[in-house]
Length: 259
Image (tube, rainbow, N blue to C red):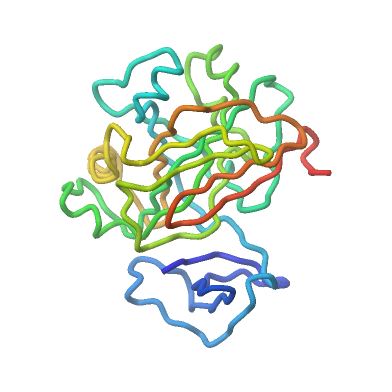
């Protein structure tokens, strides 16, 4: 099942994507996909504007969860997961513009698998993680690398508006432990990895994070990025593709409007 959030004229709704058709559902797809009701309204996918598939209260991101990325950043995988938060205001959807902030001269892409939490949960055992996950989507953990290095903490470098593209929809029936993940910039491959190379699995991460903080429906967990991160510049077109989910595409501008 693929669950999208979209705008048609002035209305915003959730819908099920079936080929080229989006079937509207009543309300939101939380807390359980088993309770989804289709309204009978259908739109061709070209008629609607796809939005970020979820509006999280918080985004919990995991650093250095791939050995090759840890090495390219000049460090080792930490003994325990290293997490940080991105603000909800960083979220944008497919085809939206990543804005390059004036404060940074080194903004980079990070293709990631994103976990969408489906229900209120705390202290989730690893073997029950599937019960609290709604599904998965593509993410780009955009980072101002120079500010990350200079600040010594990552709130500013990771937290600019537009620095968390998500989409194009939520896939509910994929195996998160073995998915190809790729990033292209202007049709040139930058990152080409697999979630099978993650140091800690989705199950381990959700269980560990839920031991720290309560997760609520719609929260997003970014699971780390493979090697190959690189610069984004004005006018670039960047895509994140994950097997079984789809492709998230965004444009890059130093003026806020792609031209």
